[in-house]
Amino acid sequence: MALQMYELSGRDERLRFSPYCWRVRYALAHKGLECDFIPWRFTQKEAIAFSGQGKVPVLVDGETTVTDSYEIFRYLDRSYPGKPLLGDDTAESRARFFKFYSERALAPGILRTIVMDLFNVVHPDDQAYFRETREKALGRSLEEMHAPSKGLSALDAALEPLRGRLEEADFLDGEAPGGADYMVFGHFMWARCVSAADLVSNADPVYAWIERMLDVHGGVGRHATRIVDIEGGYPG
Image 1: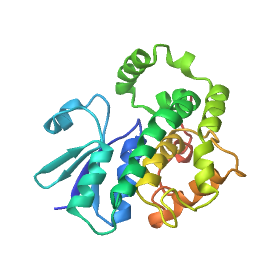
Image 2: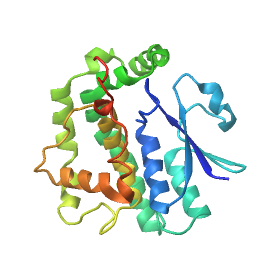
Image 3: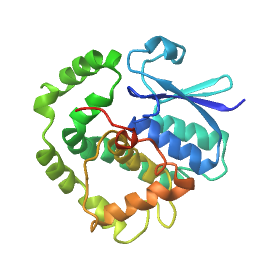
């Protein structure tokens, strides 16, 4: 039986934009594993109630259910040891650092840049939930949070450590992409799928890394549906 993964979708089911689900999509592609991707929306909690929690990604492998992107990486390495994502303790520690770096340093600037684009691609049935939960977490309205110039400025500063690494290697994990790359790149796919915003200039070493990441594993990222690709788009 093929692996199954429940992942977040938008008002168009082809839009799959969760950064955490994108981490796992890349991990599966890295290992060459086939998977059925099941669209899921924020308010469809009952569909994943079997997982014991209410968030995606949810990976189902036969009788085994795994949640949380990092724990899924660990599970995949244990169950499918070929082409490891995390490798030895040093590689796992590196990936874990980049997990927190992407979530705590990069995501806030990206969110300030794209939050209204994100709201506009959420399914209409989910928008009230999205607004209520995000505004409670952020302590301000989505409209107040949306400040692209401030977001891009914060992101630019947060990217400095990434630039340092990418000036000496093609990927965060070295000559080929690995778990650390996927941990970070999920957030760039999040923005790419829902927004036309340019997060970095094409002279930035991060931009060159993004382009390489879009093309690895048969272009799994390059071929992803984006809101700008959908005929007519959606009004903001």
